[in-house]
Length: 207
Image (tube, rainbow, N blue to C red; front, side, top):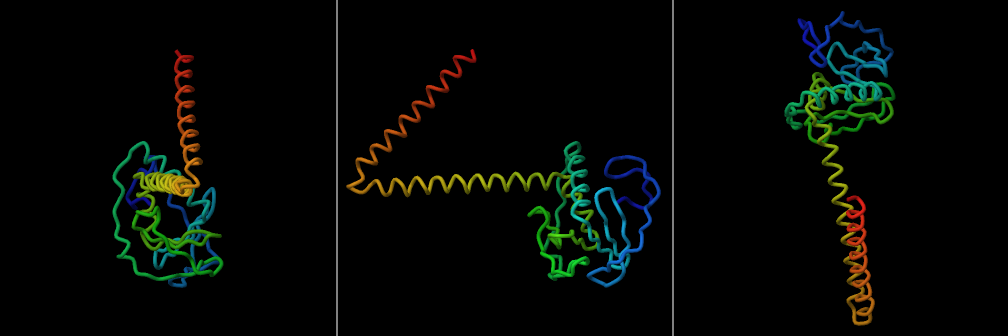
């Protein structure tokens, strides 16, 4: 992920050592059918195609790479890079390990990088996509996507609670249910009063 003439790592600033040398791989590129070279990391393996530049990364190794970049991005945040997903041609390719057709998805929902995912084995990146994904994560894009997803889930839960209450009240608004409606309203008012009293006592005891 560093330029050939680089002396220091662009991710962490440490001095670069010798470039790793790939080992022969039993798997081949799903795009151009050329044999992979494999690079073993602490958590998994990266399968690299020297012909088309595609890379297939084990799930465990990819998680490590993303965690490292996300931690660095918290220290030195910067705007996430932009990329138009429409510039990527639509195609479906098989997993190089199990030959099952992989699922296409927009990484982080908003990165614009369309990746191919095998749920069992790993993720396929076309040439240059893995560095763009790491830049997106380093800039805080993945954390922002998680916050948006959590906010959307809270909004769905709120709407469901409102719908449930409205349906309950709708049934009580009928003439036969007026008494039940008034009882429900009194119970609600009593609950609100109880919560107010508890909050007041908590403030008094705290002081």
